[in-house]
Length: 107
Ligand SMILES: [Zn+2]
Image 1: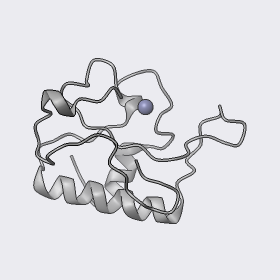
Image 2 (image 1 turned 180 degrees about the vertical axis):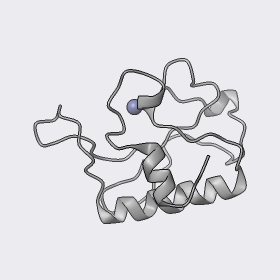
Image 3 (image 1 turned 90 degrees about the vertical axis):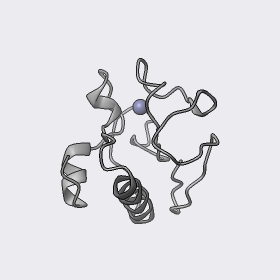
Image 4 (image 1 turned 135 degrees about the vertical axis):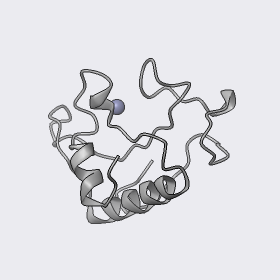
């Protein structure tokens, strides 16, 4: 979880490899949990609490960029997608493929 100040908090232990072990499974995207790792950020909607919005702070953008670039460098074959590419959801409230291009990742 990426906090507003850019602090990255690990909510579930994992060994940082490219395989999701049974003890690493989290429930973030139905149908994909056994093979996916989830990155979340604090925010994602307007103050009403329901309207999707990209609310990432500069610190969150920097932390997310660093985390994703580092993971992609180590495991270039792992696909990075938004929840909204897997289900009819607004999450994560931004265009993941566009953002990946912006940070130099072409999948
Ligand atoms: Zn989601």
